[in-house]
Length: 358
Image 1: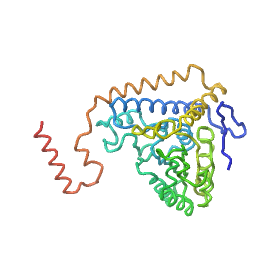
Image 2: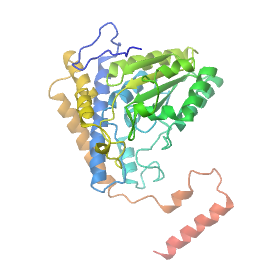
Image 3: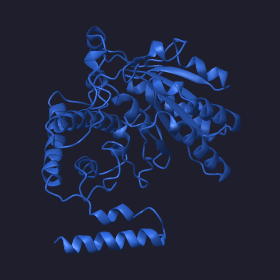
Image 4: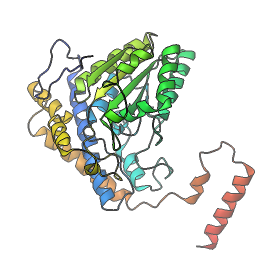
């Protein structure tokens, strides 16, 4: 199967396939790609300095998340893996929520219960991701069935990596979605590495999109560093889903430029020459060239955008570091609508212990 590419590495566009995206939206898409890159840089530095405990970067994969969210309606559900934070920010999630989450303080919406980077928001329809690989795939199929059963005109998109295609949840999710024609977009970010395991050790097929036909699904392989190709593929998949035609499988060919997480050292398993090759295919640089050619971006505008985000993030970091951690009482909140008697007793004991230790 040939790979869909609309925008090449030099910023040249295939005019016949170029999606009709409003100019303001194109600039917004670029801005949020830059934001994701900047947050990666900040997050990794903070973790290396010992100021936060963990970070999950998505450098090199900005086009997949921003191109996809821009193609969806704001009420469609996003079921991420954990490398798609830009989708939440694009929809309006405050940056302060992430920064407070990084520092696990009392303003962290997750109340310190989630590994930094595994955050979610019901308001922005961005589901809390989980660390186990592939579990979200079958959950997305089930949620899609619920949309269909309730006659909601909604689509959900689920993200996963090439490694997740080896999981049993991948099989169950795609099979269920295909049989019941759920309005689900199965979006595989093939970034070539499942932590330290290369794609060649994950699958006997060279193209993961080939798996779609085995489930009776339409599949498309796209250049995942081409934000216009991502937008195009997700738009078409969403149209099919809303028309009751069922799910689509999208394989986006991209590359994880950074480590799997801040706990990983990719230099131990990844050839340096591969990394250098993919740096040349940087999705942000490619999209920037395209916007320059369309006269939508001025030469000094990129630095201004970056500087504005940089100042905002630095202010939020300075504030977040001074905020106390969540109170111990939050261990018991948001778990039960009515707290069971044994947990009430434990809560009372903790409150009493705090009073005695003041």
